[in-house]
Length: 460
Image (cartoon, rainbow, N blue to C red; front, side, top):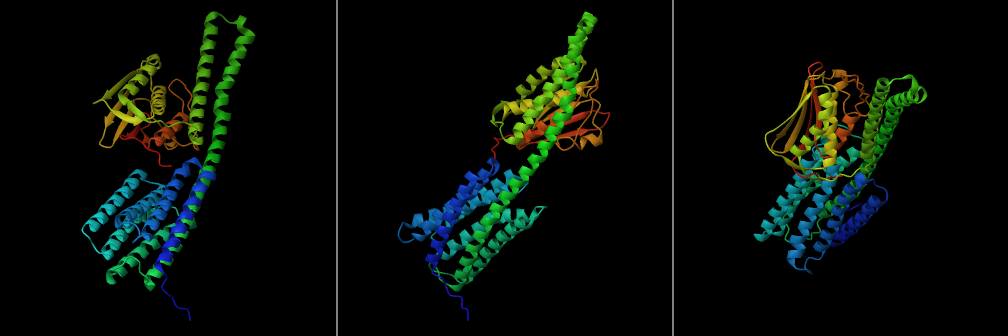
C-alpha cells in the first residue's frame, strides 16, 4: 500500500533552485527569440523574479555556512523581491488600472520586508519568521490573483492560470495554519505536511510558468490579429479617402495643363487655390496615416521630457490663427497657472494641433473657440471648446475607432475622416492619459484630454 513519506527538505530546496534557474533561463531565451517588443519587458520581469528566487533558495541552502544576516535577512528580502517582480509581470497581463496595481505590489513588498526585518531585529523565533514571510507572500500574490477572477473575459488558459495562483494562496494559508498549530524550532523540517506542501508548491510553480507563457503567447496573437485587422482598414482608408483629393488634384492640374489659354488670370488663380487645398488635404491625410502606422508598428519614438503646456498650447494657437481669421473665429486660451509635465512634446503638439484644426473646421463664421488648461491633484486636463455645429450621436460613438468610418463635412464643406482623432487617441494612450468628446448636435463640441502629472514609464 502506498505510504507518503517525508522528503529531505534540503533535497527539495535543491530541486527548487534548479527548477527556478531553468525557468528563468527558458523565459529569458523566449523573450529574446520569439517575444514582441511589447511582451519582452513583461517576460523579463517574470524571469528576474525566478532568477531572484533561485538566488534566495541558494542563500537559504547555505544556512549555517554563511552568516545568519545573509541566510536569513538578505535571503528573505530577495524572495519577497522575486515575488514582487513575478506579480508585476502577472499584473501586466491584466487590463485595467495598471499603474495603481504596480504601486500596490511594490508597497506590499516593502511592508512585508519591513515587518520581517523588525521580527528579526526583535530576535523572533524561526516559527514567527516563517509566519511573517508566509503572510508577506500571501499578501503580495493576493491582488493579481483577485484581479484575474475579476476580469470579464476568461478562456481555458486564463482560468487555469488564475486557479493555479488561487491554489498557491490556499497552500500558503494551510502552511500558516500548520506552522501556527505545530511550531518548529528549526528552519528545515521533514514532516509529512512539509513534504506535501513542497511537492504541491513545485507543481504549481511549473504549471504557473507554463500558464504565464501561454497567456503571453495569447496576448501576442491577439495583438497580431488586431494589427492585421487595422492594416486592412488602413488600406481601405488609403484607397477611399486618399484617392478623392489626389483625383481632384490630377483633374485640376490636367485642366490647367491642357486649357490654360482658355482662362483669365482670376480663373487660373481660383483653380490653383483649389489645387492647393486638395494637395493640403492629401498631405494632412497622409501625415495622419503615417503617424498612426508608426504607432501601430512601434517605430515611433516616445521621448518624455519636461514640457511647459501653456507655451505649447499658445504656439499651436498662433499657428492656427490665420486659418481661424479666414472664418472670423476668435481663438482664446485660459489657464490659472503655469503647468509643466513630463511628456513627448511632438506627440502632444500633434494632439493639440489636430483638435484645434477640427474645432476650426466645424465652427461657423464669427464663432468662438476656447482652450482651457486645468490642473488637478494627479493630472492636467486640456479642453478645446467650440460653439460650432456639434457632433451627431451616430458619429460621436464612432470617434477614436479605426474600424468605424467617420464622415462629417466642415462648415465650408471641408473633408474629414476621423483619422486625426485616432492619431490623437494613440498618442494620449502612450502617455497613459485619456481623451474624450462631449458634444450635442447643433450646440458645439468640447474635446478633452488628460495627462498624468508625473513622468510616464512604459510597462510593456
